Structures are given as structure tokens and as C-alpha cells.
Length: 491
Ligand code: GLU
Image 1: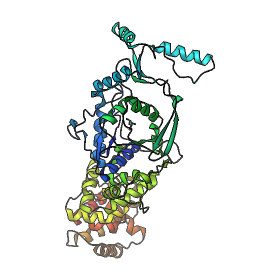
Image 2: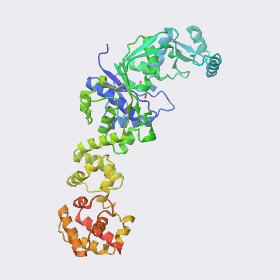
Image 3: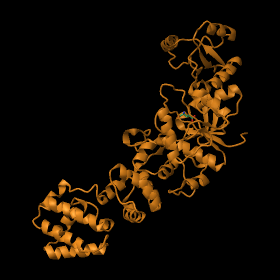
Image 4: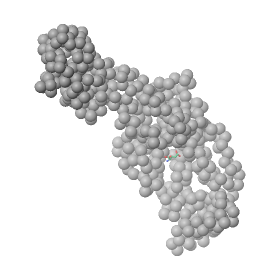
């Protein structure tokens, strides 16, 4: 029996954090929080060529952004180990794997194999020629005495350490928390490598050693690891260690039911962040890929997920990643946010795009009241706010035709003097409509000859957001200087 729920997220830092990885991390986090257990971040970086510090930092940033803090693992800022079961990076645990491998060897459950790559290749060719293309490796060293093996090693011969499967001829049954009973015939695998000839351990071995020594009670991970579980069960059995509870969560699929790939858009958490998605929405969305709320609720906060999460409601079949739904869900979360909080998220996107606007809380809140219903992702604010930025104002080429209307100059002169006569810093929608009426009467214009030049004088182009919505968000002085710029353009 495990004393405590302890679960882990164990990414390999060989790329970015994929939304599927975010989901695995979330499920483990939810489970730990709900059961008052611990959530551990372990770094599976034994692939020296592909693992990078940059990827590790990126993944940690993404987990922080998502808001899934871990109890043990690399410190989120310093990356130094925190917790009693470290090191939490597999690359720093090689001495431990070596020790366990030696123990298996001394018990006759693993052995040094001196076969070279060429010999292995030649054996495969031979098996094929004999009509046994799927036969496993038959190592002549499986029963070599340890004394002999040590002699060869001392003489400098290179050896891998292989797990011996020949005495394990039985079916293995995994009681998967999500998939139910999964049967693996033991002849699915042959003698597999634990340590490579350079001493580097392989994933299946490190995973078992660490899950055991770090006292993991449950392993919730992606379905693609299901076939690995047989090898892992064999190692647990070999060491006489208790098996944790396993649950393999369904694959995340594209709309065409293929494994989710970059072809159809973002799959990296970081990219969703850059595209203006909220972490709450990403978590809500990935949670529902393979899990459902007991009351089938769709918009769920992290706190509510912690309360209602259960492994029993994890679905074994593949879940489709519906990007339209994700955007909709983001809009729901975005619109729930108080304006001040939303502004703090929106403003950096505006600044980055050179859309500099008034920062007074009263103004930003008023502007967000107008634009929030039109926003689905934070980046939608860029084009919505652009017309409000004096720095970004310009007379766009598409205004040419409107400005060449013979009545345009008269209309805009009337518009400008209307603005100058208003005697206010900011006008209301009613003030605006009054000036518009006076332009119509004074310059003898109506319809598009009235509306279009005014629109160009406000936003720099004949198409865009309704002017009467924007005008109360712009200073009268700004409207005047815009009108002057446009009049200059007419000449
Ligand atoms: N490092 C593995 C991966 O990134 C984790 C496997 C596991 O959770 O056991 O897929």
C-alpha cells in the first residue's frame, strides 16, 4: 500500500510543452491536489543529444504560466532541486541506475551482453532468412557466468546490460485505471536493454527506478506509453517492487482523427500564449479532452476541477482537439475577467504592436466594456484598439476615393468646427450625433457623403468599427488633430 498519493509529470526536455503534455500534467496535478497528495516534476533528460536546457526552461515557464505548481522537482526560478527524493533530473541519477542494474545482474535477472551492432544486425538477417522475421534477439551472453563477463569487461570489452526475459514466459495483466484489464503476452518483448554500452540508461529502466524510489503511487500518462508498461512491469517484478497504479490517458487527435500535429495550427502551449489564449481556457479545454465534469459543465475553473476530478471519469477513447471550441472557450473565460485584470493581460500585446493608448483605469475599463464582447483572444484587442491610438493614426490609402468626393472637404471643415465648438474634452454619443447632424445641414451632405469622410477623419479609413462607439473613447483634441491631418491630405 502506498501511504500517500504521489504523482509526477515527467517531460523529456527535447522540445516545447505540447498541449497533450499540458493535459497529462493537469490530470496529475488535479489528482494530487484532490487527494491531498504531492505532484512531482521529474526531468527525463537521458537523451543527451536531444535534451537542452533551453527546452527545460521553456517547459518550466509554460507550466508556471498554466498555473500548475509542483511540490518537488527543479525550483521554478533557480532550477535547483527541491524535495527529499532528488536529484529530479535523470541525467544526475546515473549512479543510482547503475546500482540497480548491478543488483539485477547479481540476481541473474539481467546480464552483460557483448554483442556488437554488426552481430545484432547479422542475427536479424539470419532470422529473416530462416523465416523468423519477428524473432527476438538471442544473445549468447544471456547465461554467461558473471565471473566470465567481468573478465571481458576488465579486458575492455564494451557491454550493454540486458534484462533477461527467457524465464518470464507468462502473460502479464495490467489493471489500468482507465482502460481496465490490459493483457500483454510476455513474448511481446525479448531481452531488452537497461543500460547502453556507454552506461546511459534507457527510458523504461529509469522510469521504473525513479517511480519506485520517488514513491509514486500512481502513474497517469499518455496512451503511447502503454506498450512500454510490459517492460516496466517486468523490471518491477524483477526487483520485487510494488507496482504503482497505472492509468493511460487517451490520445489527443486532430479533426481528421490523426494524432495531433502542427499541420493544423498551434500545438505548443507557448504558441497559444503568444496567440492570446488564457491559461484558464487552455486548462479548461485540455481537461475536457478525455475527462468530463459530473454535471457536464463546460466552463470550469481550476478550483472546481480539483473538486470534481476523478479518474473514473477519464475516457479511454481518443479525444478530438477542436480549435473552434477552444477559441469559444477562451472567449468565455476572457469575458468573465474583471476589466482591470483583463487590461493587465491585453496591454502588453498592444504595446508590442505599437498600439499605445490612454492608461487611466477609468478609460481602459470603458474601452474594454466596448470591446470585450468582440474579443475571443487577447490579440483581438490589437486591431480593436488600434484606431484609438494617436501614434498609430494614419490616413490609409483606401481612403483616397472618399477624400476625392467633391463634398468631402466641406464636410470635414464642418466636422472640425463642430468639434472645436463642443467645449468638452470628451464627448458623448449624443454630442457626436448632434455634430453629425450639423455637418449634414451646414455642408449639405447626406448618406455616404456624410458618414464616410467623418469615418476617415476618425479612424483613417472608410471601413471599421462604428464611429459612434469610438468617439466617446477619443479626446476631442485628438479628433481635431485627426481631422486636420485628413484635411491636409485633401489639400
Ligand atoms: N518522458 C516521458 C515522455 O515525455 C514520460 C513517460 C512517463 O510518463 O512515464 O513522454
